[in-house]
Length: 622
Image (cartoon, one colour):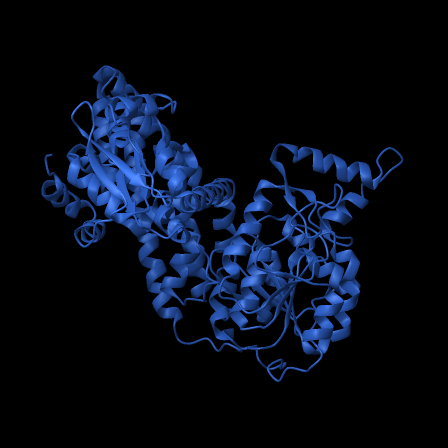
């Protein structure tokens, strides 16, 4: 048999030095045997635990078998592929033969020694040279999210087709089942994230610009790292089960830290329970209604993401604590002013409240109102803004039950089922199911997590317990770390001068870019010169794109503002790349003109808006 390892490994070293090093230093696994198939090419068998040998590839013609396998997978040209199980790679070669060079192919193989056999007995040059192929060998499934993160936008927009090499999937069932489950959840997270950014990116930027003074003046949550170490914390969400036990929180109030999500603030105050902290992360104006109270209680502190409406931060003034945001504009401000401290991978305000308790060093952390499911047709507790909004609409024709059912019915396409704490199925949504699994992944390595919700779905990793029992067992002793003067009072340093220069510099960049974009618009769009100067327009735009790629900071700020506009450009560009080999050059030019003409409008509006926003920051820094 021919040995391709030396040539393959040389190519692989350029693409993935880590995978190359792994294969070079992998010992043979005696369970795998290379044999010659009837058609003369290598095939593979494996010795199972029962001592019997079984073929992973056809003993007659592995290539023909791979052809039939890939043909049955309903391959589409315009998508991504996640290959689970490499074997000797015949199906991977066939997949590449049937798709274009534009597709993304992510290969996952558990056993390095099997991958080494594949690279030894098969020519992988066309696979390794494919720009969209990456190998992930011997990885921990828990690390998949970090691995797939760079493909998050691509996967979220275009989806993926799983290619599962069945013989290996069955042999390593536990491993590949976990891989598959992780990928499904990661994909759902990516979808939620991109949909959120596409829907709210402009709102994020407006709120961050409006919150500029508050962000600059607020202390960061980093100043409270482990400030309440060992102190019990109750994290209050506004699920319907909160009605059952909210009044019990008062019995141990002096011995615990109470951290509330915004929607649970009114119900708590109505029951004469003042939380220590209230958390807000949502950009929607609806969030403001949760804070529509007579007065902010003394010593109630707001922990906030810079994306929230400024009407909320203005209520708290010197009692607000900022966290770092993943939105590009907020990241820019923290890098040029002060990093506030990160809570981690935030998916909802409930996650933020839990992460806050963990950041504080609290132990145990007690969850209440964390249903993550419906109670009948209801999602929120009595007294919350959402429940109150329904009550305000009650009339002779519409009872509260009818109103709640109508809201529930609108969510029906996203509704699924999950086991609740009583081992019965209850209705939830796909998004809330993702939130549950995010909690599960974050519970690892945490102090004791007690789910005292007394309803809702079962959250793996949390101990189900009644709130009465949790308070009796863990919250009777006054904690020495629960002190009223633990909040860091920030004194502004002489840092505004440096921030002023950074804002000035970035504003000048946007001014120059706006001028350049206006010149292009005047030359080609207003005078409508596409019929005679279409190619020149496309070349001019390509030059502009190259310039933006050389200034990643500015490009990142612009993409973060009009996220949807950039996604649409990406989609059009991908279609052009896929079509270049199939249609006439003339038609490609027309597609590029349409792509760039529409995107020019996006860039002009974005650059002008950001220039105005940075101008506002200059005024408040003067």
